[in-house]
Image 1 (tube, rainbow, N blue to C red):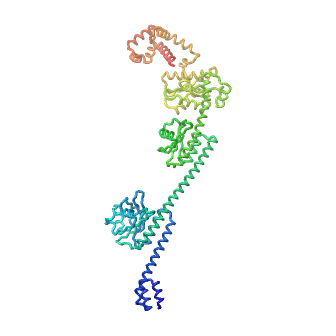
Image 2 (cartoon, rainbow, N blue to C red; image 1 turned 135 degrees about the horizontal axis):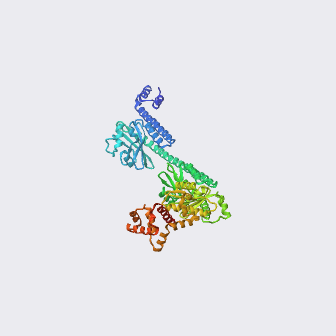
Image 3 (tube, rainbow, N blue to C red; image 1 turned 90 degrees about the vertical axis):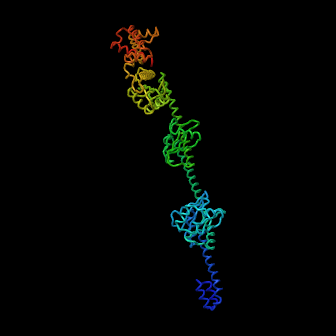
Length: 592
């Protein structure tokens, strides 16, 4: 073997024994030590070249990964490949409060280790952040060079890790994470391993930062796409609602369209709605939708007029653009409600004018007759006058309910006297009275008295209404708070409000209780009131005295005067019945 062969052996030998054989064959035993030095240098360079090649290849691979969790796991795996002498590699990422959380690992056996979190100022992380340099701890659990974290110490002990080296991942001199290489026995890392991990940590930090930035960009892109879709949805919603309004859709149709767009249930609350009053007031005050327990409520209004509220019942929270869409829908709905309300009010005024004309004895002019017929009411047809009154509640509510009922049944109605009246087509007053009573009771609370007057060709419409009104007043005077009758069904009492029988009533009262009426008028006594109370209390003197707030002897004296004027037989059964009827009719006539 020549000297040239010996030199090639120095460069290509796999180990020292192969080189020693080559040098002996060339007769160069004296140069073996020098050849061995050259061999070791070349071996070191070749190993360093392999490490650097692996490092750069790993760095290039990291640049292709964009998801943060994938980047972290890839860093841990590549670190383990670069330093195979480590038993485990893991990465802890810095949190917003300064603490660190293990996010990726390889070689760990303890499940609790894989999500360990250290508080700010504890563990190796605290020193690494403070110095910005790598740190190796020979025996972690017993080290007094760090502030121990109980959870981390327990996880290390469970995984039987002893020596730990930490290398910072830094961006612009700020530590964003730490790469750890740990062994289950005391083993200091070599200078080459330290340098390799630190160089790798620089590349890993850039890859991690890139992944974070890519994540932010992706989130921004998603947000932009979502906003763009929201804008498109807003435009579509506006177009659809505008088209519906222009096509003459009503409030319910528009509400159903809003329900479909937001995938929830929509209700339109009236102005006098009792639910969600505080939320509606807040929405009216601020001009925005208000979150409620079951969704969102938006006040409806136009030109300072409060028109109710739009209630969206939905399980999910709306984004800011979706909130604006809901408010836009509420604005469009407000205009529609305002328009429909204006139409209803105009229609109500026309109905009211026609009703008042008939109820007060006026004669419908030709154009009014045309208006009435256009609304389904035939002024020349057969109609029943109906009157309703109640002891409590707002009169406007009763008038509105009666007017709405009349409009829906080809009639005319509105406010009248102490209640509300209507002219409804038909012939059976009793049946219509009960029908109106049942329908109004569905909307109104409390007692309700409804009376109807039969249609008569010879009786004007205003006389019919007065008859129905006085019938209701009679029932009210009799203490009836909830009833539905026709004037005809009142029988004997009809003499009180039938003008044709007014002479009969006067003659009956004159022949029965005339002397008492004259005595009371001449002497200022109260014989008639005393007799009325006496009959009402069933002839009991004590109760009569209490009802009149007088002494029983006073009642006895007054009744003696009654006997003197009417005769001693005034309490006989037949005479008492006649007198009782006369006193009752007189009292009702005075109180109607």
